[in-house]
Length: 487
Image (cartoon, rainbow, N blue to C red; front, side, top):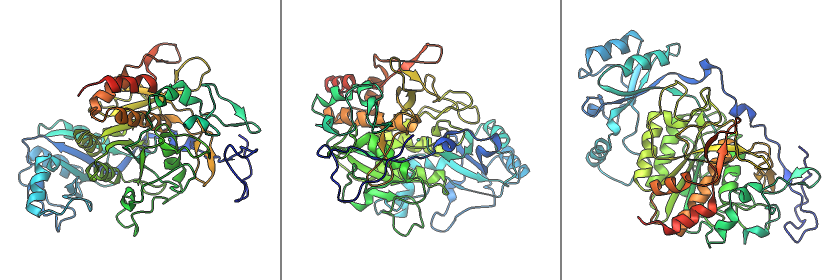
């Protein structure tokens, strides 16, 4: 990959400039998409369980105002459960969900508890064992108990990875190398028939796209944000300023994702699929902070924030073993809650776990369906749509281009661009952009209707053996079918 020197600050940019060069940023994403060794796949000592509906989880007597963790076990727990926990040296346990979040509307403790139990959050408990304990083995034992519905060793988490006048959009679905050897065209827009969707007079206007991600440069020249500071928000409890979303060294990730989904039409560089959508930048992780509960909180923040517009969530996270993040029970439940609130949730299928199946977690166990739009990725090929190293299987709703060598998008610097950002991170961003176009065309669509329309594209995706494995994103057809759909 060749790089170009940054232009002087006063040099004009866009179509009026004779030099259409960009700062091409080199970012090595390979380490974040490479499966880890088994001993590094799971958080040491941590298991999340979901009790059956009629079981006493122990949360019934929890004092949320004062208690952090408990060491003593509730008498209501059956002897078999207590013996397993004690045999494996349980250190403490606690509710997996807080009673309320900082953004929860003011309410009495009595009302908050009533809503908490009504939603079934009281059935989720987190167990803390010694760091050397075999959490996979303990989870297996817990799942055998009749009062336990789910027991999951928590995996480590990681990042999954007139617009036609923009300088770098191009005009075909073929990769074009120019500017002295650098990629400068958005071939994926044409492969997915996005210009055809735009011709139906949609741009994402009136729809919110909330990217929950690893960091952002909200000042990139191709991104626009609302002035409401709460919509540029980090989930870190001790951050000092919750509006700062550039924490850590992974800011290129969220910048790239928002560029693909919603970069503005401003004669500067690229065009996002939903270029008039309202963009929310929600940071839930950094290179040094990988707490899955922050991602749970972020989903809750987005779907409970008052907003008249329809919302689309991009959840830019996978497990460290490159599996579907929905294997974590609390994330799974919060996605369900968002969808129940009529929010569309787009989730990366993962960038190639050991099984290659998006329906299986790092522990080899089946993942409960949430109703999300689970997205797989394809790599560039001049003629066919070939699945990349991303996970596949029946759970994948739709595939989209996600090529780590050929996808152009916004980089972290103010006028920088990445020519290699793909995987299921890039694919999910593109699908979310099309979902926003569909909602602008018909804001009465349910998340299920959007899923079904996207799933039945007539563009086919094949594997290495040329076997059909799914459908490719077709924006033109999706928007047309959205217009005709009825609630």
